[in-house]
Image (cartoon, rainbow, N blue to C red; front, side):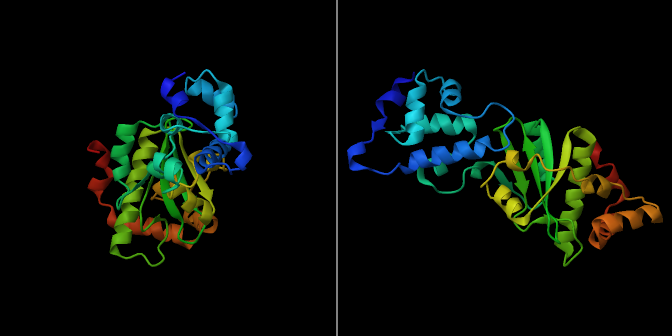
Length: 264
């Protein structure tokens, strides 16, 4: 067991009936968040001790139940292993997964991140509201993921979109085209508005929402050359804004843009 972790722990005097320290409370909260929809064995004292190479399971269990204060070394190791925001773990500032959330104006930034990050799975999360706010999620392991979104929201809607919004829609279209071309495991998911904003602000992980039923609107959006009968079907299924969004893309995407894969 790492000496620093043992030497810096502090036993709580139970006679004072002191409440569980905030550090311990946030570790417990993180464990609960990490265990949601987890396909692997549930995270507990034994598995954490093994993951952090600590021989004493009871030490971890005492930290979880508030009998012992975690050391700075313990907090750092825990945060690094499970991809938890260390500032949140230590101070409560930010959110548990704050460090995973990346904000850009243009969706095409996600292409470079994809190349550098090399995710195993890609999710496209869409909020179930009229504007269809959208975020891209890359996941490399159960704990390691990145959320890419726009501060003013990328959305699949023609409602109230100005020139910048239309260009952002085209940028999103190009990014989806890239991901559809180069990534086999891209999954569309529809979530509630609250869940969407919890995701992009780092309050919840990808795992909490990744098991929703697949949504195919982004695959369908990429098919711009539809027969009238197919347009009618898509309009009935996705609504008027979906068709209008396709029309905006068609009006702004040049022939050269269709070949942009050659240089991204």
